[in-house]
Picture 1 (spheres, rainbow, N blue to C red):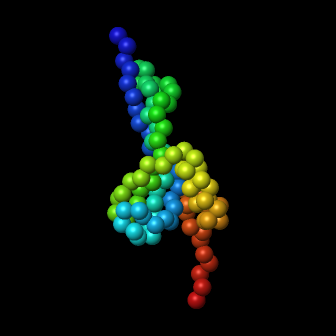
Picture 2 (spheres, rainbow, N blue to C red; picture 1 turned 90 degrees about the horizontal axis):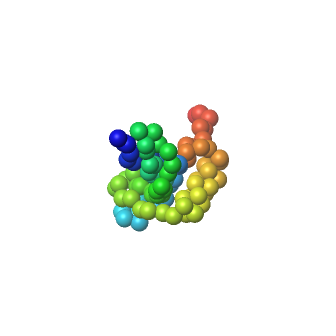
Picture 3 (cartoon, helix red, strand yellow; picture 1 turned 60 degrees about the vertical axis):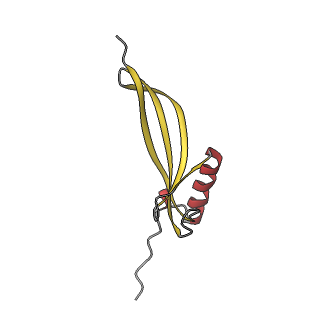
Amino acid sequence: MIIFGTKGYLYQLAILTLVCGQCGNPSAHTLRKRVTKFTLFFVPLFPFSTKYQTQCTFCGAEQKVTKEQAEQLKAQGAGGQGGQPNGQPQQQPYQS
C-alpha cells in the first residue's frame, strides 16, 4: 500500500502599502506565496505548484500576480521601508 497526496504551504513575503484595485483605498496588502508539494507517506517531497497573490487588508480582495511581479513588489517594499524585512515600519524615536 502506497500513501500519497499533496500539502499546501502559505508564506507571507511582505506587507506593502498599495492602492486597492477593488475598493480604491490606500491600505496594507500582504504579498503571499502558496506552494503545493507532493507527499509520499506524509513526507513532502517536491513542489509542483507555486502561486503568488496580494490581499487587501481593508476589503479582503485578492489579486494573482506573477513571480516577476512578486519579486518586484518585494524589492520595492524593502526599498521603500528602509530595508525592513516583511515590510515592517522603522521604529521612530519618541518626540515631544
